[in-house]
Length: 634
Image (tube, rainbow, N blue to C red; front, top):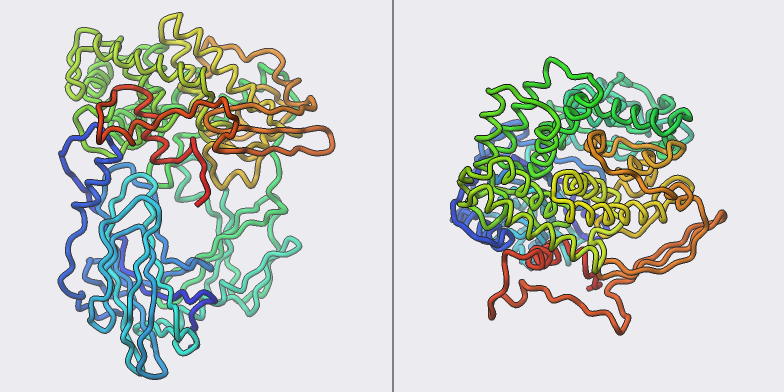
């Protein structure tokens, strides 16, 4: 079968074995989590002294103890198995392909990856890229000494699984591209799989139909993904129908998320597609503010737990919504205990769970068994990166930092005389440390504006964190948090155009291409029931027990024409909206002459003392990691 390199010289066909995943534990302490994770990557890679001597055959077990399979991901130039890890994980993958050369030749190539990569060509070790990195992507120039005929490339990838982990690699051939073709190992069996892949490649959606270039292979299914946020439905959210032998299929109205799956040689290949014409805003029937608010809480309570990448669920917001609406279920105690276990294991984003747990404790009674378990978990939690523990938690982003700060205050308040084992503080001391940082967080946002400005993902999280500050801190802090929350909602309302948030964002995700589906639509729909709604990850469950009141005038702000310019973080935001159009832009870094650019403390700490307990240090880490505050094109 003819398999040439793609237009840029990338190899597009591989067999892979993996991912092999196992816990990665190291107890080295560091108050700088970014530096700590860099250190972990430096010690993770196991040196590769020789090429694994695998017989690479489809479905047979490789040296990692996992079967070889064909990698299919429509049109991707990279072998990309990127995923999210909530705890520190060692990740390994093997890959193998073959290049058939028309004659003996020296081929220049580039290996691209974020991971550690070892590459052998005909047994010669031609690439040892280490250590892994978070970003930017690494590249290494290599030379392949190809002989006429078949040449084997064997790749071993190693990386640290920590939060959003880019487990991928690509090999780009620079010269002799037209004289090389790809021949997979075990060609007798993989040719059938390649035929299946090429059939998937040729699928198109047009005019409400799925068109196939040739009849669908036997056993092919057309599935509709409900995109349910509920982890309880993760295994059943795709409804499949057999289309074997068909050359076209009429797509069901209102079901735009499609997955086509076919099987060859025991390998299941899947292509996900979207019928964009069917992705439209969701509106509730017209109702008043209070009834709409009740409907929001019911929607959140209907979800058992929020799916975290289909691996597990976070349920605290859903439990809160069920308590607020009197719809508690028999399973909620089990889910509550699971939440405590996730906090105890310090899953990334467990600060979200702690904030929800605090809200639960402030509003509802627990029996003695649960009280004791909660106390055990909260006394042993790691409330900041300078406290004892090795984990994958993100502390430094605008939303995470606030949640950690206020959770430290609240946990310290619950147990003022108790000893917090990782913090090495009493509850009273922990409360004071959290209070200092909450106040500094507010100082920063009041003076410079939001860093994750207008983010339709993270403003919802920040909103929930601010509600805990409003409801569960002293009045002088609470009053400041009210004003900051007002500003958050005013900015989103200002950028709402025809019911959806249209804005430049300090942090952004793919969902922004469908503005009416963004998480912040939950906030907009709370303000105005007439605009499209979204689930918004259930953060509005916090609002059900909050004293915070939505400011007057936001609905008018959402609808009125505006021509304005304002500063936030390190950016200048410009906006013009009227009945005919909405135009908005971001300028970063700011160029105004009177702007006092804040100093990134992490750039100074190697040569002078800096206050690593300050929010200014946290914000500096955030800029180093996310880059949200200073966009400078390379």
